[in-house]
Image (cartoon, rainbow, N blue to C red; front, side, top):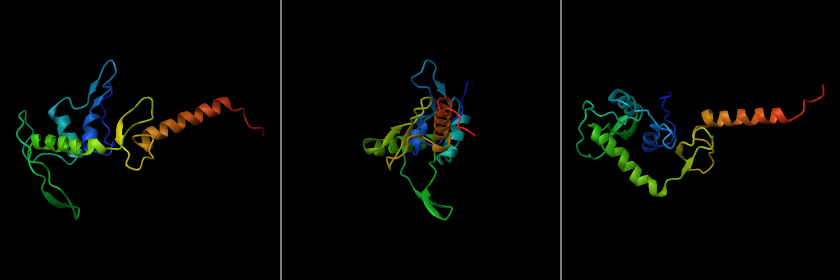
Length: 148
């Protein structure tokens, strides 16, 4: 079973939605089955809490600014609850006007943000390439060979 997780939806809260694979299929895939997988995901999203990950949730906290790589950035949350609350807040703020689209790849359908309104795939370098290769192979099967 493929439990690989992709981080290319355009927003951390959409990446969180994508941690449940095949949500509408016969068998769904939980990509964050344990605390270690959650830690890896939070690291990638730059949401790793300062306090150790634990089973209990506490309260939301204000986002503080820090300097990371010479640029202002949100400070990491201090707890798991704060990390999850930050995701929820982001979803609530963005969802009403979010330019959401579903990947055009028949095997994917991952939701992603498309502010410019021009993307067809969640990740052009992944699903887009697969779609273009399939289209090329389909054209090659139906077109007669060129004379030499």
